[in-house]
Amino acid sequence: MEFADLLKPEAVIPQLKVDSKKQALQGLAAFASELTGVEERTIFKVLLERERLGTTGVGNGIAIPHGKIDDVKELCGMFAKLDTPVDFDAIDDQPVDLVFMLLAPQSAGVDHLKALAWVSRLLRDRAVCERLRECADRKAILQLINGSTTPHTA
Image (cartoon, rainbow, N blue to C red; front, side, top):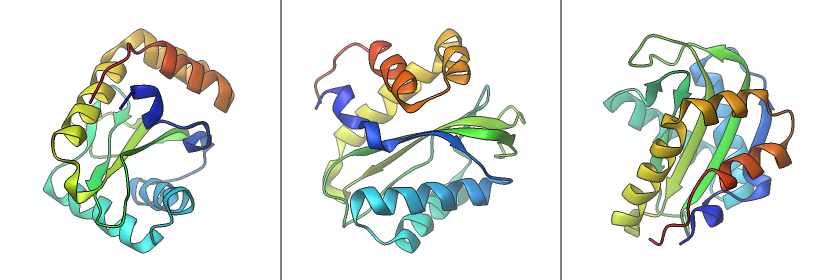
């Protein structure tokens, strides 16, 4: 799998209006449900269960919620830029405004871990994050994300 295949154009939300972590996860679950055909409630439940294990707010305004779901057919990435930063219980106690969600089939194994590593490397780059915060539309976000990564094979 190429990283560009992980994030399809329709999986980018340039401005998600939410007031809390729970609303952000609900909004992402609803959007992911439309893209994957998996029930919204199922996705939301998996995301909440993962958050109970430990926050996916990794610091510097970034969160990477993720989970494995039986009905997901392939790795699926989604990126959302939050309209207003929200408390995500991040490890640095800073609010989150950039969220990359990753859903994987139960059978994904190492591919899921590789995808998480790609996302983590991408969002660890502060210059990329600042440019993402300045992007106003889906196309610009997608070009920046895809242009900031080198192809990897999973």
